[in-house]
Image 1 (cartoon, one colour):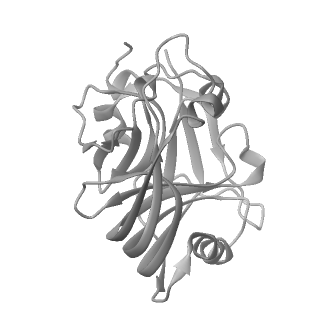
Image 2: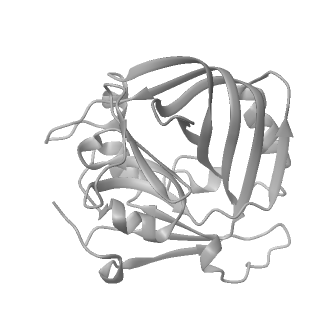
Image 3: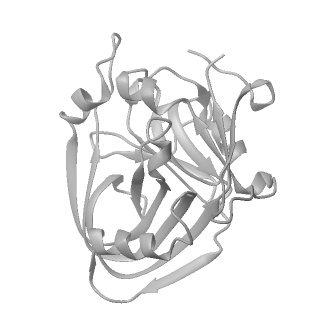
Length: 241
């Protein structure tokens, strides 16, 4: 397994200043930098080897999503705490030396808050978030906290080498239906022009308030939630040594 302290990690030259609508690059602000562990292309093709540890990931951000070495469960980081949801529905906080194969994380500092106090489907919820974006050439981090009458989440079984591609693994996903729960959704939205670097559009993970269920968010019905949104103007990718 590969492991290295964050001080010795090499951030590649892939550091992108996202352009605002006026065409001017935003000022450098480390707190508004999204860090991506590995690249979407190799990950989608089946590279689930460790790039960094959980402890290293926590040094980079406080809100994040991703997957573990061997694709052993879904990763969700909330308030700087990292959670692992495995295919057998077990939720735990992994040890700091647990390997992460792919993730995105940011020091979450939202600048926009939207209340939603009516029954809302996942699609309508995401449409509301999308409509609130000042522009659609920027990356956004978001968090949704509150009550859900229905949630559908998934996790996937751990893999062994030679690793199969991600679509083959997802075909064997385990789906968990939940009802009448409170919890938090953490996620990111990537613009179309970044497809291939990451997956364009919304990508969300969910965790109950009691930390007893969660996973990759497939569907939900929100009842009373608050949406927090942070635009991100700087992107850095961390690749294996």
